[in-house]
Amino acid sequence: MHQEQITQLIKEEYAFFLQQRSGWSLTAGPQDLELVAHALRVLLHARTTPDFLADYLALVDCQHADGGWSPFSADHESTVWVSAFCGLMLIRGNRLLGHERLARAVHRAIDYFLATQRPDGRWVDPRWADLDTTSHPVSFFNVVIALGESYRRSDVQRAWEQGVRFILDHQSPDGGWYDNDFHPSGVEITAHLIQDALIADLVMENRVRGVREACAKGAAKLYALQAADGSWDGENVDHTMDCTRSLMIVTRVLGDEHGREVITRGLQWLIDVKNPHGWGDFPGMETNLERTCDGLDTLLKYQAYCSADPLAVVRLWGYVP
Amino acid sequence: MCPEHASAHWVLACRLEDLPPGGRILVTIDTTEVALFNLNGVVYAINNRCPHRGGPLIRGFLDAAGGIKCPLHGWRFDLRDGSSQRPARATTYPVKIQGEYLYVLLTTPALACRRE
Image 1 (tube, rainbow over the protein chains, first blue to last red):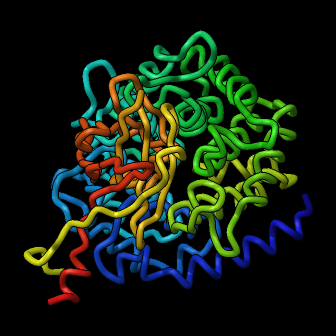
Image 2: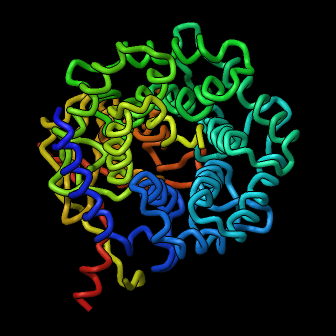
């Protein structure tokens, strides 16, 4: 796979993404905030965030008094998963924007996650498996800690560690994480947990025993579950993007070179099944914006993964400044 | 849309032989995608798009209790009535078999409005 091909694809898909702006921008009206967060991540990784301050301020405008967000911007009940994604985009975006309103919104988001954690360390959201849900506030706190945010620091550290331990305690002996109500195959959860929740600890200070082994076993599980054509979970584009990206950061941090071949096969499959513009949820399905954002994010992360700078791809998760 | 004028029509979905026990098939009627499942000889019809994020239920995971789980994020829906423990309900359609053919009952408000 040539870098020129990746660069050209990024250019074309980013232009398509911008053409669809009214479908993801809060400046155009109420939006699905999961999609908004996916779009803001593309802007971050395409390094165009400073051109979109109005989108970030609009996201602050729909934050609730409790510090959370709802799945749809016009709704009023906060839920954990989407709140963590929004909070994550705000704290990462504000490194580039340096806006006081965004900084205050991040503090309110910290309050929200500290108030909603359960005593056993998990967070709960009816839309997602508890493990998946928990990985998102942990991911947000990873970045809060990595960027040196001092607001309620000791509370954040404690909540973060409880979340990490909840995740570690629920790893299956085969290396995967499962949820019988949501994800019997465990592919998506495993990919999410190792990249979003666990691997950051190795980048920072490796304070929790067992994280390295858990990540290595999780990555090995994903290797084993990859189909011969490079996809995961029955040609599931979403989950193949999850696994491909997850292995980029996890194998980079672990120094596991075996991952390169697996990642390349996954990415090649994703390129082979893409539509003329964007991606659908499965091969042959119509393009949707969320999957297109994930596809662009995967290409941008692969570009960083191939960089000579070993930390380049880690930066795209926000775990190093 | 004018729901007071909505009308329901039995619409031909497929030949019965195309959906043997244990089988599943996706049909598109006008713009509506309907996923059909034959569970032990009983046919169920459900809107193919998961109300969560639009995942294709035709690719979902069936369970012995008559549920279908979306392949994207695992939301489960009862094929009999679309009910779910998640904050959404899927649309299901009555099914009838006539001779060698299988029909689903679809509501067509747009058509009703045009007739008005």
